[in-house]
Length: 564
Image 1 (cartoon, rainbow, N blue to C red):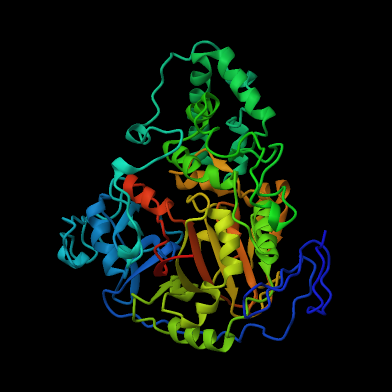
Image 2: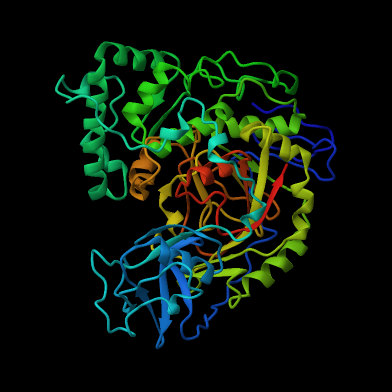
């Protein structure tokens, strides 16, 4: 249902989404509809085949994302792996050398194609300024890679995090959780011999569910372990625990293979209001606020279904998903907020930016291949990310319509952490080049990213972001393991309503990265966008205080940490 158009807008908009003139802003904000035609005035420029130039001992990230991936070193004209027993000391040396801040994780990603091993037997103290100062084999002469000494991959935090607020651990508040034990691993309290959990109405961990995931061999044992855990929790007090799940279901609890949400709640302030004046009223939803988190029913859900990190993200995000009160918004802000709350994304036709100035900045930054603190090149240019300051974004950063909508969605105390420029080139062929090409969520819970298109992006052949509609409120069962956040393409296509978020130059979209989504890797042209990242201001300091292996904010951006 379209809301009334203002007389100042003369073009016709198809059904579904509203059209508004922003209040107190200097530009026209138009929310687009899925059926609107894509203008051809600004197609992507023809991509030239750039020959990447490397020098001996160059380092790069491969096989993942711009702030996480397998570390490779350039030697004798070839890229090769660094292998060793994984340790954070190695990551602490590599991340600054790659142009990032501190390391927050070390893992492994095997190359998809035969790749030489240049370095092995690596040992670092963590204080070295370069990986070459660490102990290592001579070139290609060491013990090589093995299960105990795999190819090294790192996850890095952004440089410039000194602007991000911190919270002492003893001052941290997590509704429904005891902070001192929140990260303790699950331990059984019964022998689990009272029977199977198959009679529980919420039983999502059957072995057939492997079909929903990319890494099926890794998911099978995980599902088996989670089924045993569910059985054990139900054994503690079968009648009371079964009743708790039943009551939650009556209050709107829904679930699938990946997580649960309360999309069936009787009402929610995030979707029930139809005018800005009513958006500040209290919600009558039985799940609104923190009362649910502090109930015995929620404790059953946590014990039976959620990993340690999943419990923490549910505690941090729930009150913002189902708020009791909202600030009053102008009509345009409320239209953005309501579409975000309903679908997890909203399209914007025109952000009103000086696109010529943005083009100049993007073209310069994406060419700075030798400056790792500005530009990161993945897989010979398949993906290029740049993080320069962008003064031409100022009118967007200060636009109160956008900021009101984001505060409504993330909470009154929200922050724009930073931005980046991202190019997906014609060399991009799939998830081997770009980890975000698999269906996934970002393992960061509720947060927003705003995309600005630097040229027209077609839904067919333009490498658009794709989103599974309505998955933004899922509380995922597991956050720690990479494999549990990567989903099978056929399963997603068959079971969810998929939206491709293409659009015109100067427009874009805002979406919740907690949705199941992907960056389409296939297309006829390059794709260039500017991406801004927003969190509730409490989230990243809480994650840092707990020491979670989560990049919050993302490591691959120009840091601002600016309250909105």
